[in-house]
Length: 208
Image (tube, rainbow, N blue to C red; front, side):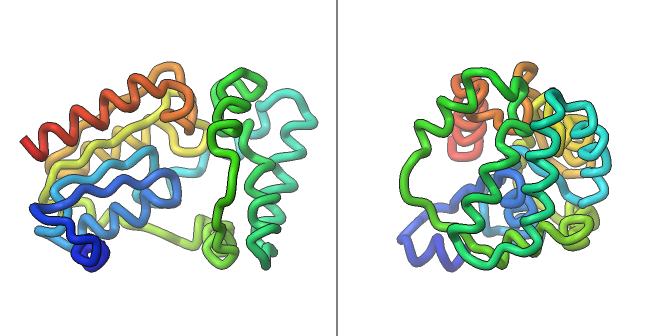
């Protein structure tokens, strides 16, 4: 990311934001590149795959039963995706699971706003579909982070629970935690105004 920032002509430092799987990327970068980013936003995410332990229980409680089956089938297919089109189809299945109200208005509005061309990397999807998200564990790197980190979480997140976000924030030397009380995993789509305010406030602090 440091090289990317330089190639884009970014001067005076940069900030990174990672959502879901992307959180693993920005947390690893934060610990491995001291003096690189001025700030990191985890939006939401985990530092270790062990934090995913409750996802299965959450899925078992999801209603209706047909939606549970839809999510399970999509997750199983993630391990075999071979093309970008297959990846797009597989990723569409679990969307309702990531919203507080699976049948609410936030999901169709999100899909409407994000409709259009997108690029997917099947090899990345297969990697994260492996048991325990490929064995990713970055907890030992949290103490190495030397810049401010904003950890965001949805109170009703079924995959990256707020408790795991709190644990991450506690392990980081300089972190703030914001929990969105009316969101699941898609905090920026379910509470967009509050989300933007939190991120803008953080960026203002690290650049001011």
